[in-house]
Image (cartoon, rainbow, N blue to C red):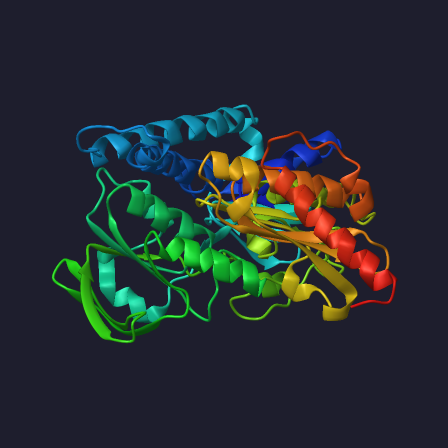
Length: 469
């Protein structure tokens, strides 16, 4: 076994790990990047990009089928070629992965180690029994993996996760999806629009990360008009029968039903890739199966020379957050023990369903009931949305009663990815509702719906300030 000494060792070469590596090098310190899996980042290989490629195909199919309300009629049958769909998904996915591989290729060979690392003592790790690494500090950026309940493992290769979808050569005929979160909603709806018979089941009413009951109820109603969705399902039995998955459940109409599917897609969450690291030998304390506690401003675990960034910390599993966290972790690992808070952005999350879901800032469930007002717009009658027949959804904006500052928003509606960005920028600038209403709103645009919600919030703030309910 060879021995290697470095200032910082970074475990994982995904988005957070690569960002951490660049930060360490920028600080003038030596870094070693350790990766045991495939290079290419989760986003490029099995996450953000391939899912959006599948969604783009689904949106094209949906648009062609829904031209009649505009007076535009297409004669003939819409034909979806599953092999062509998946060929483009994989081809373009590989192109995005290639860009990441190009960046990794530029990293000096001496700064990269292939293999899986684990601690043998504080600051000492072994990599696949071929290298012992001694480092002054460590950045953990090992990512996460789909969480699969033990009761489903008997389904064998009929049980899949989102990673598997993007390696299909053709589209299946029937898929049951467990988990209506970001992944489950996006893939469930996309597959439906591409001609796959889909059933989506959830637990405890969860849907797309929404915590506002009113917005979540509207979202449920919208999606149920397009595909079978039960966010609070009673699944009685799931078993494998030959090459099929047999599902017995209580349907929305309260009757018991049995159906068979080609695959069961598990989208019930992800777990941090930490179990093989032997963190206890580095002095890290954590609950089994969970990420250790850490300071999200510095990414430091306790007072140890260990920093954790990206999906592995189970905080905000988004690419831009992983990049920011990696930079903070790498910078602090390089300057340890002089650790300083890094810059964090306003919270922003998007579900690329149709309509889209966007979450900005503080969620409804985390706000104190008597501390804020809610500004509302229903997109059903919103001008531009109705013109383009995208008039579905609901936006709630939250404003602080005392300061009148914008706190956050939850929404489902047209162009939510863009509305969410505008609201996140306003939040990061600590704008009040009044200041936001001074901004320009062109006519006719979907953003006018944001103005309607802000005006509603302002009126409620004014009433409350005058002592009226």
